[in-house]
Image 1 (cartoon, one colour):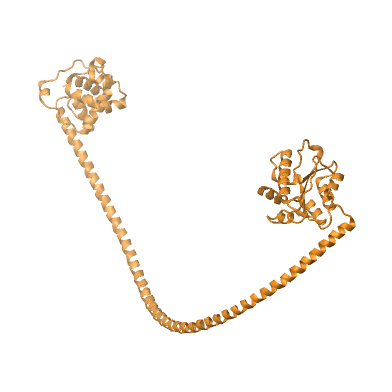
Image 2 (cartoon, rainbow, N blue to C red):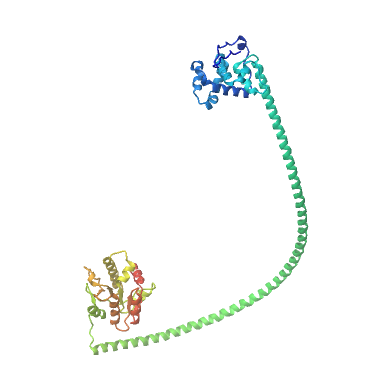
Length: 457
């Protein structure tokens, strides 16, 4: 039994454990009692003087309150069992903190209204007379509570099962009603399907009869078609015979046409020979000598600046708006190609400087002049803005409009200077230029056609 307490809640003396306490084994504690003992011991442990705390628990005493029972519970329980003096000191402090309940427990009395788990924990720590009986009584109460709780759980489970069974019966009744309705609907559909089956069987019999009639009709039509095919083949043989006769007649006609053409060719040759001799005689009679200048040269001398010397070229043709048109025009005898220079270069070489644009265009036109033998003239605006222009290729005439005039006006003068009937091709995407030269008999072509022609060269 623990020693009496003084007014400062400190034990006046520490009772030594009796021999009986060493001989009896430690009681088996209910789990709830064991947990409560750990909680009370962990809370009271830091309140003991340091020299009264066993060495193994001094580190535990420094833990935070919420970690002390959880992490140091095993060491505390071991010391409570192995060290009666430590248990007595710790129990004395816990009994003191428990107040009236602790005083009642140390006197061996368990208040009726007290928690049996709390009473058993205090009895284990203070160990008054009859403390084992208090622990057993607490264990009985805990077990009774556990049995009551288990019984209550079983009752609740039985009630829940009864509720679920009632719900299942209600659901089953609803499902049974649904199944009866579904059965009635299925029976109705079955009756409809039987009626439809009878109708379908009747329709099938009628379709089979119709198929038999169609098969008979098809056999009749096949016989008729066979007769038609035979008649057609006979007609084809007759037509082939007529075609052979027609081909023979056509061969005869071709030979006749060939003979007639030979006669016409002879007459045409004779006519051309006569015209040629007449032209030669007329040239002698008019005393026309070959000229070193062309019409465009006179326009250049009167209305244009020429940094380089012009050269004549002969005739062929090229294409503009469609891939073959420019070539067809440049193939005409004595064709003259006139190019609106900057109109072409700014569409094809706009990313270059003006000097590079002119050089690239003039070089390309030199290739066209060499390939076709045509007379080629390229016209640019403003000779006063040009410095150090290289010599033009053979067959290409390079002209610049004089101050106060434009390249468009110079192009129209070149076209008007040509004799009627000579093919003049003007390359410019300027609509005014195209309309103006068309009125004077020239062939206007877009700049893209010449760019495509230069790309092929």
